[in-house]
Image 1 (cartoon, one colour):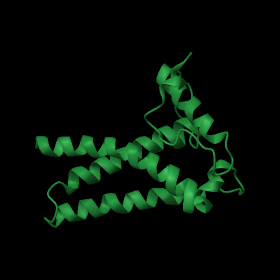
Image 2: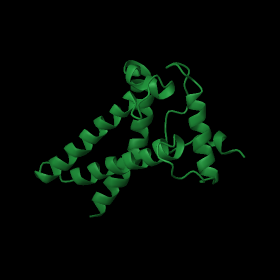
Image 3: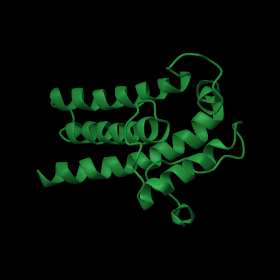
Length: 147
C-alpha cells in the first residue's frame, strides 16, 4: 500500500520534470508546428493544435492502467493515477487558471497564484520557439514570487 502511495507521489512530481522537458525540447523543438498556435493564435477555434499533447500522456496513463489490470505491472495503477493527477493539475492551472478557457478561479490572488501567472506571462512574451523561459508549470522560479 505505502509503495503505491510513494509511487503515485513520485510519478506526480516526476511529471513536472517531464512537462518541462517536453515543453522545452519537444514543443519548442521538433513539434513546434503543434505548439505554435498556443503562443500566437492563428485560428478561430476554441481548440488548439497544442491540445494534441495531452493525448500522448493520456495514452501513457491508460497504458499503465491496462498493464496493472492485466497483472503485468503491479504499480501500474499508481503510475497511471500519478500521470492522470498531474494532467488534471496542469489542466486546472494552465488552461483554466492562467488562460481562462473556462471562467473559473478568476479571483485567485495569493502569492503562488501571482508567481505562476508572472512566470507563464514571461514564457508567452516570446512568440517564436527560441529564447523561451519558464517551461515548467507547477514549480515556479523564486524570482517570480516578488511582490
